[in-house]
Amino acid sequence: MLTILTGLFSALSYATSDMFSQRVTRETRALTQIVWVLGIGAVIVVPVALVLRGLPDDGEWAGAGLAALAGVLYFGALYFLLRGLDVGDLGLVSALVSLQGACLAVTVILLGEPVTPVLALALVLCVAGAVLTSFEGRAGSTRGAPWAFAAGLLFTGVMLCYNYGDIDWLSQAAISRSVSLLVALPVALLTGSVAVPRALRPKAAGAGILELAGLALLTITFALGPATVAGVTTTQFGTFAVVLGFVLLHERPKPNQWAGILCTLLGVSLLAAVV
Image (cartoon, rainbow, N blue to C red; front, side, top):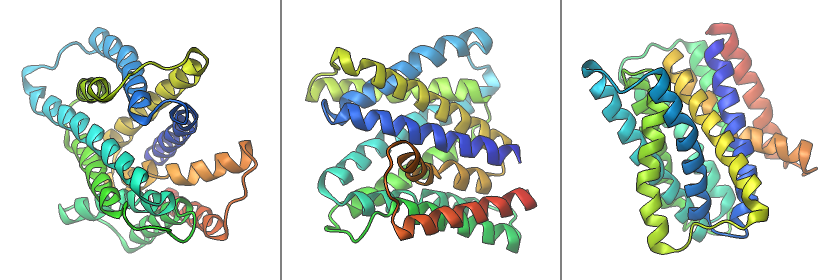
């Protein structure tokens, strides 16, 4: 049950962070906001990890390497996602990226994680809910599809690194966030500025804090396991985005999005009953 709760709260944190980031990127650019999000997260989590955990021990360097790889893959996934959104349809790209939960579940099952018929049904409902809530309507273009698939695969790689990394969650978060920033900062500086207008800085900072909370909860979720449950619960950010838009922004969800919310509720209820 704790795996489900931390996974859902991770998704909620990411969805709320994205809501703040969207407002910032409309007046700056996506890479600038990514640097702010990653930078704020690194400034907070790295000192805490060094004080509480210190440097990895000799037996933890393999886990530290996987955490570093997760940081590289995370930035790559964000880059491909941005490319997909730049040339393609938002609804199609978001729906395809949300399939990362299904990709992870299939991968870990093939690697030997046990799954019962009821658990499989719950996973299918959660994946269907994520896709339905992310899809905003008939796509005007499919040009973003390859980028979206690539982003989803890289996000799947990130979660696999977290799942199989034999290192505590705090060190894992600190290492991966630091590496993501070290990759993102030069790219952003070479392509433009990383300055954010003063009026937007509270939103940029808030997005960074919330994204860090999402990352920390994500690593905790995979530490708790099982990976199949962790994967589909942490990728429910599309569902929470629709709910937040409905509650805070008075947006009207489409029929498929209501169906997605229902699928998610049913899937999560089944997970709570069998996990």
